[in-house]
Length: 286
Image 1 (spheres, rainbow, N blue to C red):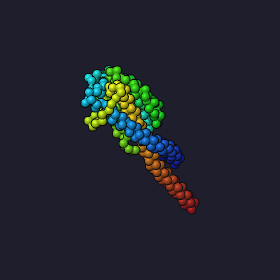
Image 2 (image 1 turned 120 degrees about the horizontal axis):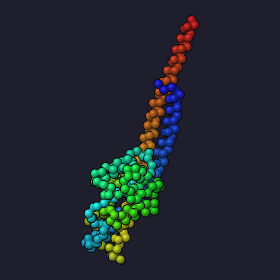
Image 3 (image 1 turned 180 degrees about the horizontal axis):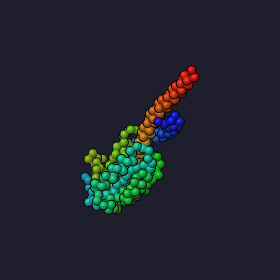
Image 4 (image 1 turned 135 degrees about the vertical axis):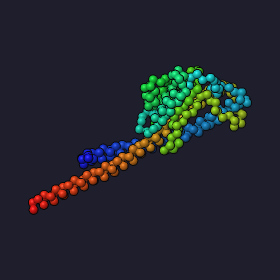
């Protein structure tokens, strides 16, 4: 049985750990509020941009064409995987990486059939360790990333498709639903075959032509979707870390209660032992 000194030491160390996890929970909560607002604001922008792109694509009775809107035979697939730079976020990173690993194992027979574009140190370390092909990566992003922070990576991803180095591109990340819920998301980014043009009734006039407008607008739209997914994933990351730290704090409180109960029992047993020894000594003198 541990001594009272050992139990007291564990109580002290657990209380120090609780302070750290409580502080991290509060920091993540503050970051989450801002990340939520960033993601929500940017969603409004991408929704409007999608309406414009769909309006152009629907123009001329669907006669407007662009390579990014058309499917082609798939020889190589690209996966844009968004993870965090740090752990301490529950299953946030593991859920994404485990899913990607299983997906690639099911779909591909060799590393020649796919390539990975990765955001976050945890994902980069995972894929490098397993010698999986990584075409581009970015690490060390701020907690509230700007478009400039990921512009080069997003452009690289779109260029890989435009140059036909890959024939389709998927984004895999954690989608933010609420402070306690994140949903693993696998969405096909390119080609933009699911662009809804059915409800588009606006008739735009273009100068230059609609094809030239699409030529410039579609890559920006795809890059914007990547940035929007990153903002969404960042909100999910802060939420996951906040929840993980709250659970750690609750566990620390429970452990402290158990240790204090053990300490009090040990202390009571020691007092009882001392009283018994005193009474025994007094009886021996008589």
